[in-house]
Amino acid sequence: MDKRTPHEARLAAREYPYPNVMAEREAHREIDRAVFDRVRQYERLLVERAEEFKGASKDRVSASLDVIERIRVEVLEPIRNGAPLTPELAQRYEVLAQQAGEARAAVAESEWHEKRCADPYGDYENVMSKWPILRPSL
Image (cartoon, rainbow, N blue to C red):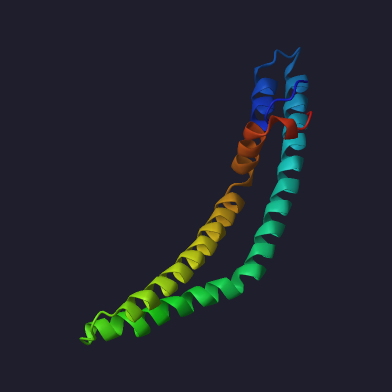
């Protein structure tokens, strides 16, 4: 069989003319088994990567909450209480805003991992579509 995406292979198996219903069912079962074996392997890899990221990013998430609090305490509250806008206050805000941006990037990456783990079949199909060289021969 040529190197189709897993979903294309499943569809092709369903469009192929079979000599009888038993042969058709067996072929469908076999191709589905092969595809979902690979999807399960891929899902395990996704979960491993997400767990690695989660472990590595705990400190970044906690730091992001700290940055939000520091922006509130060090910048927003003084302004609300009538403190003058000074270059030092603006510079402090810029530093904290940059740190908050880095924290947002960690959150975005976390959401990316979550999205991929939520639909391993769809993500596997997407990867196989984008990278034909990775397609298994089914």
